Amino acid sequence: MAAFSDVGAICSEASCRRQVRAAVKRIFCPPPASPASDYFAVALANGILEALPGTSQIYSAGRPGCKEQISAHNALQCQRCGQMVCVHHRFEDQHPCVDLEAAVKEALKVARKSLRQEEFAEAVRTLGKVFGNILSQPKNEKYRSLRKDNAVVKEKLKHPSCIASLQLCGFFDDGDFFVCPDSRDLTTMRRVCGLLKEVPLTEGVRIVDGVIMRPPKVEAKETTSSSTNRGYVATPSRPPPVAGSNARPKSAFDFQRRERDTQQAQADDLQELRRQQKEQQKGLQCASREILDVASSNRLEAPLSCKIL
Image 1 (cartoon, rainbow, N blue to C red):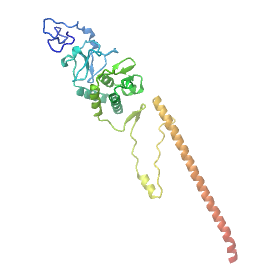
Image 2 (image 1 turned 180 degrees about the horizontal axis):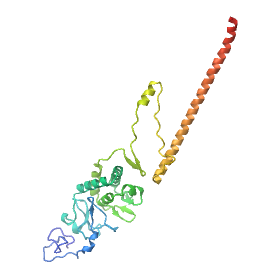
Image 3 (image 1 turned 60 degrees about the vertical axis):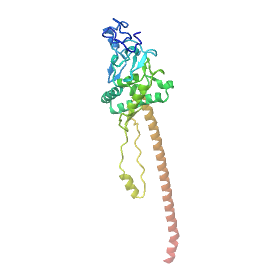
Image 4 (image 1 turned 120 degrees about the horizontal axis):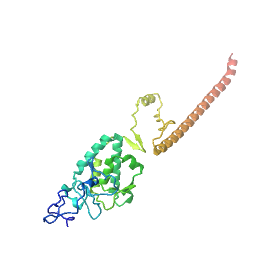
């Protein structure tokens, strides 16, 4: 009766604060948790609900000491903070209820201070992509499961605020995966995804295969203008290969990318060398023709000069 009440008196236990339906004397809920079990409480770190330490289950986000496991029959979502709570702690004064928008902004603020600029931008983009895939295709199972050993998850979602954001939006720790069940309400995920889209990010700085990609420097246009005035158009200089012979790759993805770029650069150099050789051959042929023409003209003019003398 007390477990599914809506209004009424509060439980006689001072630390429980569970409301019961009838205001009768000494109504007790199930035995309250001992203070020693308070480590099961959910901590609000960075303003976003974090995982329970040392557990792989989802528990209520209610009062400290609540060990009730959330499932489909007893889970409710607070409309104010978006947390999944049990029916015992569904009211705002029975769980750490924090406004969702304020919590996300505070978490982003802390993450921005503790991460490098490019890491923060990539984490926000990755979270937005994960949530966007689920919202666009909610029935697709592959978008609802994230492997912890995946390179993207390990590199871009390693900050505690990222894991907390996943759990706040319905993901739970299932051993080697973070899973978002089909029964989860996507209202909170939709709100968080909208807040992530409003975060200002630095353009041009990204992490690709574990390598920081920065925008290319703008080259001066004086060379092109001066060469055009001389009667020919100078082709823009090709940037040096990304990977040098002494460069050490930072990851397996970086090694593959650098090897591919090196092979492409070598092929381009070979093609340029062949083109220059062809131009040299054409120049030699033209020069030889001119020499032959001059020699033949000299032979034709020599007898005439002798006759005149």
